[in-house]
Image 1 (cartoon, rainbow, N blue to C red):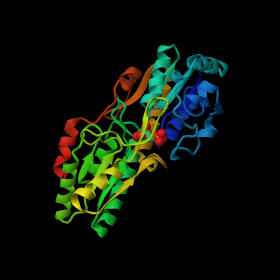
Image 2: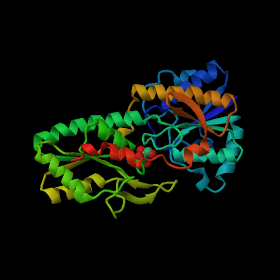
Image 3: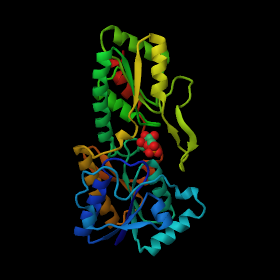
Image 4: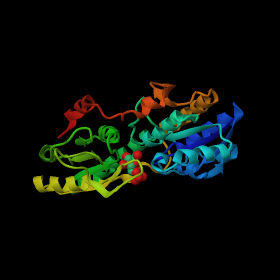
Length: 341
Ligand code: F6P
């Protein structure tokens, strides 16, 4: 078979590890050939390809980013997008596609499967918000970076008797905030799934400060004050209708300082969480996802996504993975509340 592969949406550590595993097993075990589509769905849409042989994937296991490039192109928001993809795929002699991405990229993969194309999905996102898989790769690395950052801001907050608000990624799901908050020993964790009361947050910061601890608040970028609106970076939306979030930490730091009189600083981790090489956990997960994805294509098991269930890699329908976002359940928040304040 001649298999096309693409990486779409926000990049994350581990993409290259998937690509390496797919090509290595695909060529050496199954005897398939590969073509790389550049920049997510823009590649098939505009016929942008690059060679993808064993030599191209040598030594990329630990490299951050993606050798294929990425974008948030949505072919279904473009007139005639599906037909253009069909034509370009035919012209490149492609029999099947492997799409590595999050809810948006895999949502397109699902629609293309419904429209008759052979696609297998691989779940990627630092946000860990894809359903039907216990974890996505990239999440562990993002949590590790955020945790290290929390450890670091804590020492400077202690020296200066300040409170620190750390903003991590997560538009609709607070997994990074929750896990890095627990791992970093945060005194308050705020997630998009549960609106917060600013007075209560200020109260927790005060309690903490009064017992001689530098208060650390970890907030997801999509966390909302009760009755408030999301903190937007710009008013524009991407091709999948998402707004660019950012700024809740700055706003909250001001509110805390106003209410408590405690000097409060904020830091936005932003794309640091997506850059650089993957952790060992993510390298293993990405590699296993890649090995199983190429098997699924070999079996012509299209419309499926590889997923982690416990310690097993299984195949689940793309529809199951992309139907609803996997958000933080209320009980996971209640579990850690004992550490607040
Ligand atoms: O999709 C993952 C994500 O990291 C979100 O958490 C974040 O809001 C977004 O990407 C930022 O993406 P961009 O690369 O467009 O700034």
